[in-house]
Image: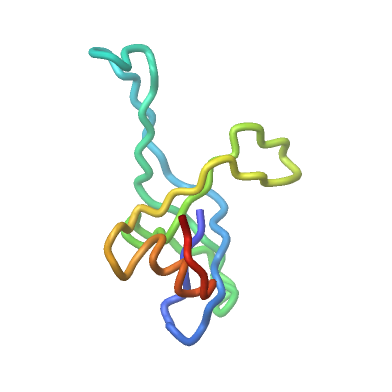
Length: 102
């Protein structure tokens, strides 16, 4: 997961190490036997204080899914932006990259 720093003048992101998740098996319907994961929060290293701090899921700017993680390299096969407003998610990324995203 990645969480954008609070100051708008700072364009850097924090890499999040360990999310707190809840795994639920889907028991009924079309997706029976599959699993649903809910991210409850995350812990991150704050380089300013030197401490590990906790954050809520509302602070997650984007998260990436690597379905073939080898414990060495992260190659995301999917990228998710939970914030979908006109000033969040993909719109924010496009503005920061100064590009159009299809």
